[in-house]
Structure formats: structure tokens, C-alpha cells
Image (cartoon, rainbow, N blue to C red):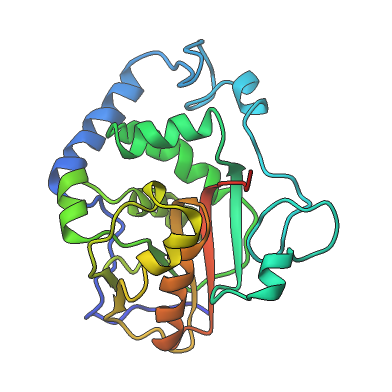
Length: 249
């Protein structure tokens, strides 16, 4: 099913704000002019952003994983946690384990404003096998968090997925209305309560298959809450498409 977005929807495949756009233009120009070097080991490379040796060492998730939350499994198709308490989302599609050096790359991208890393992360997610979706919804940030960071990292990643698969981005279909403490600073069991009633959907998602794009999934609490709201807005399925998945210790 090919989705045509209503004119009232804000379908944005552009950067989160003008400042981030200017940075990306400058970054792209430099990448075309300067010799290509691996972003991890700084060795010369014919590849776009990472050499073949470093690419082979990236912490990719094993094929044997939970069909719902993507946590690695020794046996079975679904982990015990998802069987005992099924989440509101249908499944998670993740590329890497949130481990070195992916964690360092994501941290530099998100907190260090290394927007030049967006293509590396976005294209990795775009190449990851996933089921079909009608629309992409970048994980929303509150206006305050967006102003502080200057860009929404999920939107930057979603741009590359949208370009490769031709799936439109609903940039303002959902909003985060509650300013919550960062999930990373909270114990795992407190994260679901932290994001409860944090999202609202302004757009109709009736009959649509939605893929929520984000950089990292940890406990899945944030994705689960947004999926619950999306289903109330009419979504027939909700998946999480993430670059990296934090593994339980």
C-alpha cells in the first residue's frame, strides 16, 4: 500500500532546524573535497565513511534473537519477558548491539553534534532487513530538548531510510508533550513510568503500518508508550526500527 500524506501533515525529510541544515551542507562539502578516511581508525578508505576492517568488527546483533524485542536468544522465537507481558509494538528491527564502537559513534552524533555521522548510522539502518511500513515516525523530542540539541537525531536517521525505501516521514504526526528526565539516568524499572502519557498524536494513522525510527532502544519503554498512542490513533501495526539495541547484562 502506497501512502499519500494529507496536506495538513508535516511530512519532513529535511533537517530539524536551519542551523543543523547549514552544518550538514558544510559537512557534505568537506567530505567531497577531502580524502576519504575511516571515521573509526582514520585509515584511508575507498568506502564512504568506514573501512572494511572496521566494518567487519562492528557489534552486529546475532540472527538468533527475540522476534519481538530483538534481544539475543539461545533458543526459541520470543523471549520470556515478551511472552509474559506483550508490548504495544509488534517487533523491533535493530542492526547493532549498543556496544563499542557503535555506542561512541551514537554518543558523538547525538551529544557531540557530529552530524557527519548521520549517513553512516542512517544507511546502516536503511540496509537492515525489515518488514514493510507505510510511514516513518521519528521518535519525538520535546521542544525544549530539540532546542537544546539543535536537531532530532531520529529524524536525521529516518531521512536515509526514507530515501532508500521511498517511505514518507511524518515529522510532526506525534509530539512529546512531557519533559521527562533522560531514560539513561533512570533504573530500568522506572523507565516505563517516566514516559507514561508523554506522547500525543495529532495526525490520523488509521489503517497504517508505522515504523518508529530511533537511534537506540534500551528497555523499550519509550517505544512501547509511543506505540500505545499510535494504536489509539488507528495504526494497525507499530514497529521500532533502531540503529542499536542495548543488551541486558
